[in-house]
Image (cartoon, rainbow over all chains, first blue to last red; front, side, top):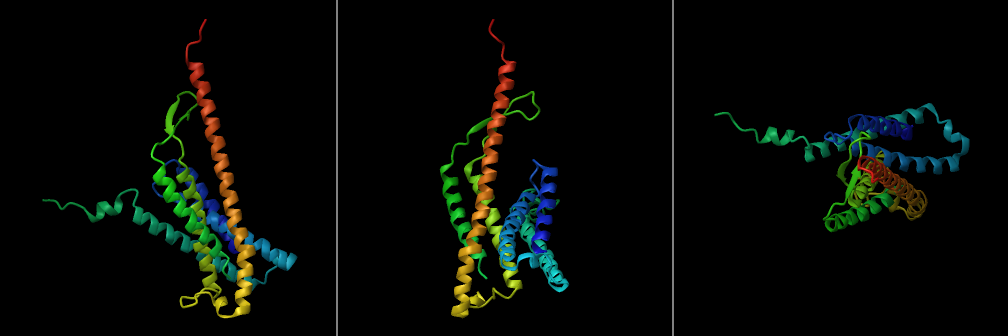
Length: 106
Length: 144
């Protein structure tokens, strides 16, 4: 479920990136790489788990599924927070700079 | 248990390599591209350091999110020795085994996918160059 949530997040981010390309001022590309990287890593994790559990891997208990979904959503939230921090620090639109160094009217 | 550490270690190395490559890349190579199939424009070729940044982002991002998962499951703690498996020799052995199998496989898969992306990018660059050459040759006056 965590893998699935992360893959959906990666696909949605990639679509948003493609829609706005080549304008990269919102740095959605960072989110795409991050979610795809995590998805690939969780895919490997899933393959190893499948090798261990077999078909039982695809029939988790509702409690495990809910916990994994909760984890997946938390992971997406964390990814979004990391992206937001990077966006605000790099400030490609100069919004923070403009707000901080706004000239006072005489 | 600690599988994300392998990808994080690779990320440290590739980030250092990116910094070195960036310093060496002073001149930007040019590439001729046509966006509309009629006019040819000159754009700068994608530097290798930018391609390395794609790998860095996948590795750092993936490692960070996987670390969070380990915190979630109580395998990573905010106090020494940080990895709960490190406090017991039997668990440490299991963790090292997991790092050697799943951890290495994760780092390998991410790197392989990145190599695929770099390969596809190179193909797109070559195709764009050929296309632009074709347009330029068609535009130039032919000798009688």
